[in-house]
Image 1: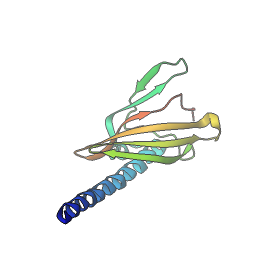
Image 2: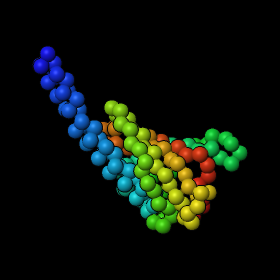
Image 3: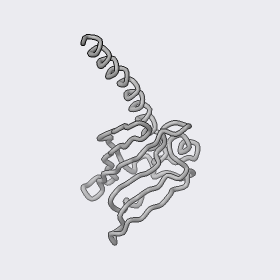
Image 4: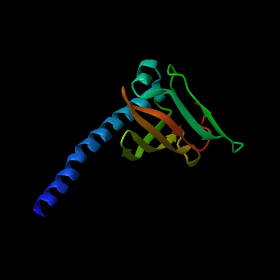
Length: 139
């Protein structure tokens, strides 16, 4: 019985560092993503975004629309918004990140909940999908 408990304990504890490393890697990728989103740059984008990243939203007519921004995106500007990561879930080679985005000028109308889907590929974690519910303000 003692051997079973020890094995069970070791099995639980040995998986924790892998999860912790994945969360740390995902945080690094999300920092890279927000840097790319604010400042642009193809080299930055290649470090954290899938080349075929797909953005999903519902337009003002209530229709689901998608687009893929170019990796050489110019960025929205450093002062365009603030973000707070709310939640990170990791399962094997997939993760989801939820963030609250507050576009400037900050107001309820300029606050968005966005969900990012990441996959761990050969090059590391990459953002593959971004979901939000309405049109982003123009800057």
